[in-house]
Length: 97
Image (cartoon, rainbow, N blue to C red; front, side, top):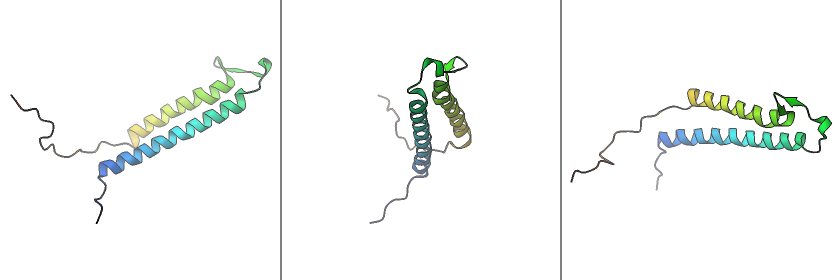
């Protein structure tokens, strides 16, 4: 029995989902690791501030969030695309009555 080929929309959506999941996973690992290493066991004298945030918060949370924002915008406008969904064959039409 032969399998039906994947719909191009499903293939595209799967590829986009994998890219998004990898971006999320990388950011989560970086943030968790950086904040754990640089935010633990510090004295008050050791903490410096960057733009009003403790340095480990700025470099471990703020910078990755803005980086993800830039990557998401580039991904949405440069990589993702709108594909035609096909002809509507009367599905979803409401009957009068």
